[in-house]
Length: 171
Image (tube, rainbow, N blue to C red; front, side, top):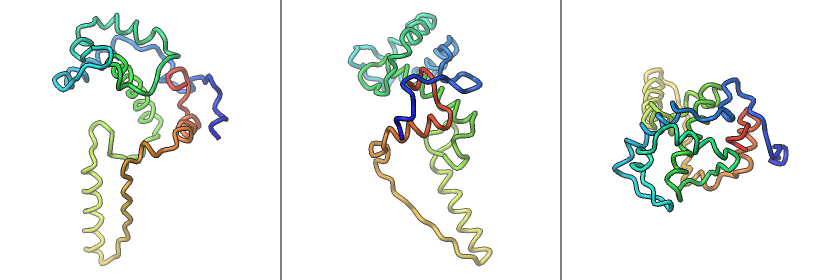
């Protein structure tokens, strides 16, 4: 199935989420995120901290992050600069997913402005409504402990591709 994805894809999104070069506004957003994390930041293998990244002029970071888009990688734990790039790529993916309606309204985890407490509230409301109406509520709770590492990555990328995620950032 994953062989159906060509080695190089073209960005099919109207907003060019996956091929548009990063801009100074993207780097300004990144720095606002890093500023919040700065106190908790450890240096990476590159011996850079978030504080070091905050000192680099935005235009220089734009040049760096746009220089070799074909060499983007998923793993961002080794290098603090790569962690920054990973946040920028994650933002593009999130914006695309929100714009395209890929993320269902019921998804509360890992979304800005949402939290998993929303689901507990919705569940409680459903229980109370069924009680008040004298109806039975059937519930299944699935504990997906450590779900992401057990996810078949090629299937995940194939699904994203078929939903429209394609272009240099995701290649």
